[in-house]
Image 1 (cartoon, helix red, strand yellow):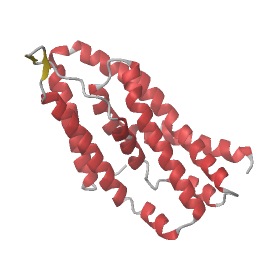
Image 2 (spheres, rainbow, N blue to C red):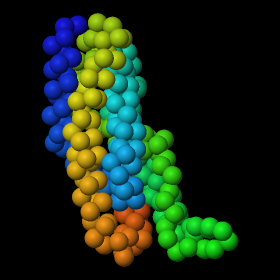
Image 3 (cartoon, rainbow, N blue to C red):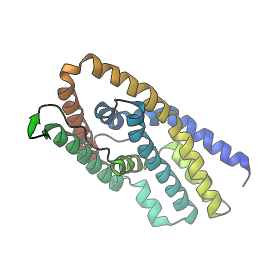
Image 4 (cartoon, helix red, strand yellow):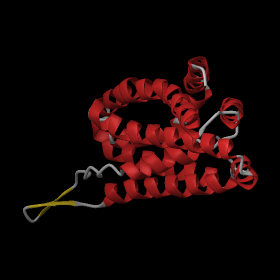
Length: 219
């Protein structure tokens, strides 16, 4: 396969990631960044596993298109299964953050009222990124069309990777280096309400999961 095919699919992924896809990530990433935005490193600890999950899904569906398995393609077109997984994983992540915000921290036998920072669940971020990427929109349909006509499996994997890399570039920059800074500044200005804001963000994540689970929010 000519290098132009990889470049073209990368540009399609880049344009997709810079527009609709970047903003469709906002209901999931923004609440998570509220609880983990003290530094760029913490923000990237969310964004990178989330983005790797997206790249994995794009590569996976490209391989499926190449193998031309009709019944699996039918599953991909009916994204209710992935909506179920996405809804449950998003609700689970929100419930976990909410639980950790109410759990007291013990130090030397004394209870503190400060929120205990939850450990980053990178697999959970990966799962949310992977499942929300299964969305039969025009750019992904273009990836499927090119992958289905690929000459071998290695080219197909390359197509998925190039598309995925293009799709996540702007999201990493936007959420990892811009949105996280804005949220960090916001939290610094309203530090008195920090616990309330983090709990509200966790509840918002649960609500997003419920909306996805019931088919009201379609990404």
